[in-house]
Every structure is written in C-alpha cells, then in structure tokens.
Image (cartoon, rainbow, N blue to C red; front, side, top):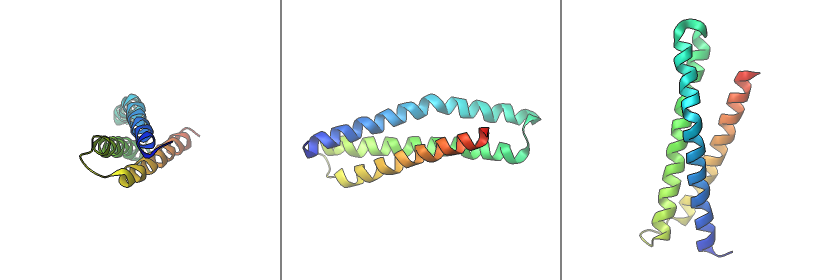
Length: 106
C-alpha cells in the first residue's frame, strides 16, 4: 500500500468517525436536556455536559484530520504526518467517550 493509499484510508476513517459522532451527539445533548429537568443530580448533569463537549471536540479533531488529509491529497500542503497523528487522537478520543458512556450506565 502506497503513501497516497494510506492517506486516502486515513481520510475515509476520519470522515467515518465524524459521521458516527454526529449521529450520537444528539443522544448526548438529549440526555443533558432531560437532566436539566431536575431528575438528574447536579454532579451527573455536569458530567453529561462535559461528555457532550467532548463529543463535539472529537468531531472537531476528526474534521481537522479529514481537512489536513484532503489538503495533502490535493497537493496543497504536506501534512501526512499531522493527519496520522490527528487520526490516532480521534480514535482514542472515541474510545475514551465509549468508556465514559459505559461507566455512566454501570
């Protein structure tokens, strides 16, 4: 697999992560809005808000990753290494969010 093919795969993965997170973001925001009704303790409400912001931040990292990858593919910039680093950060942020969501349920 060549460098260009690897970069195409990384961009596709970043876009896939962004789409996945955008699907789940409304679920987290809905949990926050339900928690504002006084049903959820204040500490848990703060954790839900933090989790929503972390999802939004991870969407931003994924979008930055896709952007740097596309700019590199188009020959505008040479950002292959930052693209790979951003993808690793985005993947582990998704893992962290999954652990956080699972911990809240347990």
